Amino acid sequence: MILTARRLVTELGAWRASGPAYGALADRVRLLALDGRIPLGTRLPAERELASELGVSRTTVAAAYARLREAGYLRSTRGSGSVVTIPGRHSPLEDIEARTTTTLDFSKVALPAAPQVGEASLRAAQELPAYLGGTGYDLFGLPRLRQVLAERYTAKGLPTEPGNIMVTLGAQQAISLITKTFLSRADTALVETPSYPHATDALRLKARKLVPVAVDPRRGWDEHGLAQTFREARPALAYVMPDFHNPTGAVMPAQQRELLVNLARDHDSLLVADETTADLCIDGAAGAPLAAYGPALLVGSMSKTVWGGLRIGWIRAEQDKIRRLEQSRYAHDLGTPILEQLIALELLGQYDEILRYRTVQLREGRDHAEKLLRSHFPHWDVPHVAGGLCIWVNIGDPVSSQLALAAREGGLPIGAGPRFGLGGAFERFLRFPFGYPEEETSLAVEILADAWRRVEPLRTVGTEFKPALV
Image (spheres, rainbow, N blue to C red):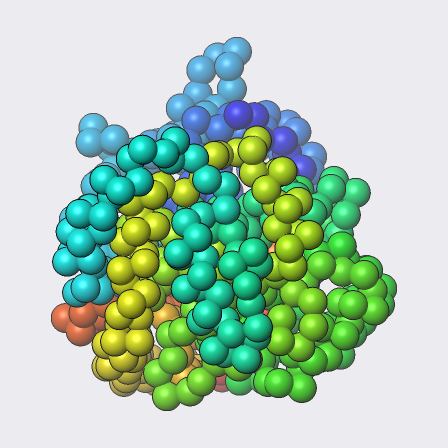
């Protein structure tokens, strides 16, 4: 894979920081590689091309590439260019990846499996022989599973039939399938900013342009920005996460849901609501499904509530759109594994019990994380969230990428703010997950405090904290 200079500049965003330009450039490329935004084996643009695109001297780019080679993040061959890699065990620097796999990984907002998963899997395996006489291929999902999912939507005030449901390989496949079915390269897509990065990546692969609408942990969605974006950009598709938004934790109020649905309808935009965190209530409640207010595709999943290793997701949509998704799906896969669907059926029979367990678990984790963060970092803005899996922390200084790198070197991969924005925004923010055991969260905060001290020279001296959106 070859990365063009223009694409790399887009990924770099606002990469400049205090200190030498070559060092800041090298650090940002290194973070992109560690976060997976530049896949391993990718060939970086030639020094002269990147220098021209960035508006810096070729010497600056050459020095940055040299620094990356010395650290083991680039392998250069004469005539073949420079390829992204990760330091091996014989790297001159310590192998950060090896260290982090044996310590903590706060780059993910996820939970260990619910206690019910093991027994549910055994019961499902006993049911599997009844299905072995068929082909095992089914683009829509088991009728029993679709029926149960439809009943859950109906109980939430959204009348739903099994024909409105397609079972998928998790929410990510559902989002990718929707974008491949309903977007073209000429289209514009609306996205929240910050947002779930893997959804943004899927949209970027299909849409010509992504247009952002701001979401704030306390103020929620920029209502004026929503109306203006629909009016001026006329997006073909709008992707939102209205319940315990990742990463801010915000919940969209009812009147704003109604406004959003009306805007999408008036501008002929396909509205897609990601509900993967909607059931993760702590001391708040999710709103009614967006489709209860008007036309919208809903994406659900058991990955956040039950376990990420159970790859079961679904799409709730009008039946004509389900048929379009069916035709598109043939090109990508031929259905969801039967055994996993049977496990999901077993777990849905205990779903309310699982959610009560998660509420207790997440409340303890959130309260512990908020207390520690406020104690160790009194100048950070740590908002209180009513649900979800993470806290969107404003660290005050635009050093999130440097802080994330320093934390990785201490054994703590964690999501820097720009990972969740467009064009390098959110350098003042950090996503902190709270679904981990208390002892791991305590250790993570200690590592983060040490990393914060190590980025001291990069921070703004003598300025007071001022909350900001970007």
